[in-house]
Image 1 (cartoon, rainbow, N blue to C red):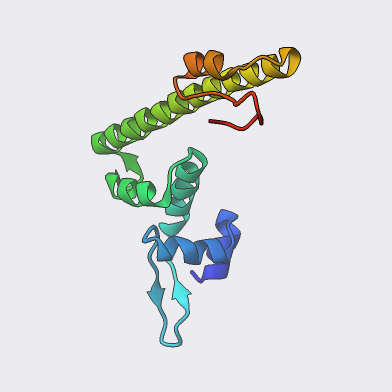
Image 2: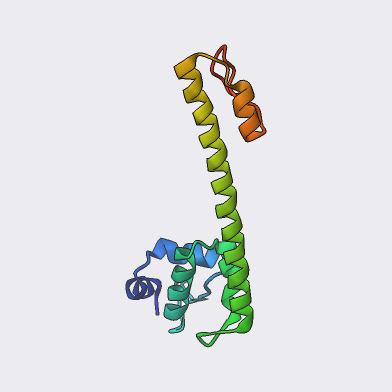
Length: 141
C-alpha cells in the first residue's frame, strides 16, 4: 500500500511515517518512480510503535524493542527489555522527586528569608546539602 493509505489506516501523518523510516522503525519498498510501498504488516507495526511511544519510550528504545516482537507476539526478550525500560523510568521519577524536594527546601528558605530578613543560607544549605540563598541579594549560592 502507498504511504497515504497507510497514514489513513493508522491515523498517523505521512510525515510521521517518513520519520519512522528515518529512525529504522519501519521499512518500505520503492517503486520505479520512487514512491513508497508498504506491506500489510506495516499497519500492525505502526500500532505497536504508537503504543511504545505513548508509553514514553524513545525511538532508539523502540528500534531495539520491535525486533523482539515476532509475528505480532511478545517474546520473553521483549518483556525483559520492557521491564528494563520501566526500571529506568522509575529511577528517573525518583530522581525528579528528589530534585523537587530540594527545590521545595530552597523555596522554604527563601520564604523564611522574605518573612524574617534573616539569612537562610545556613538553614537551606543544611537541608539541601548544596548551599542556600544569599541574604544580601537573594541569589542562589
